[in-house]
Length: 286
Image (cartoon, rainbow, N blue to C red; front, side):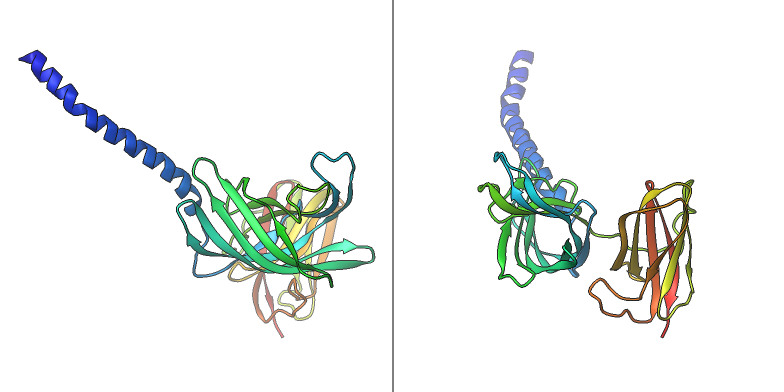
């Protein structure tokens, strides 16, 4: 009787094992699909992304071609990302209000445009960005990254888009490294750190021009940016700018990244150096 009972238990366990194995496969697949969905921005609003210091506009030879990159310039600016939908494998976003620029001789070349971005995948995280861009006065050009590995750190974005997707020796490539700046909610986040102090903004309140004052114990590369009271990006004042040891000042004229004048209200300056960040609250008046 014991042998028969054991046999019956083993026999009925077979479909149970199959079912559990199937659930494990479904769950594993779902983990890959859900991983990026958990990080998606609020679909009710667009997130303003700011280009990081590694973003570049490049032209020249790429891939296996034995010739150099002929032109490479730092790229600055912002764009907006808005979640629109999900399919079984990807979260889909629109990219709008692309406002970038890069130095070109004695002036800056302006880039404007829009497009799409998707991130997800089944067994590995993949991403793709497609943008139609106007560079200076040239006609619109179609840039595409192709579907490539990456996007595992979303909402951070790190991707290359190009005219020919590495299928031609000579190509125009834009390296995009960008993040959605976190909302600034505190009056003074951090007390500074050895080697770096964000001292004050003067005058405070100000009407026409404000001076951001900071002190370095040694020469450092510094990032300084302005945000409004809701944490939205307003203007970048310094991106990896090397400042000398001692007191330093960086001036803000009260304008946004697009040149328009900011209204009255509360603003925050965020500064970073040597791996540390600090912020100060100040007020703009008429």
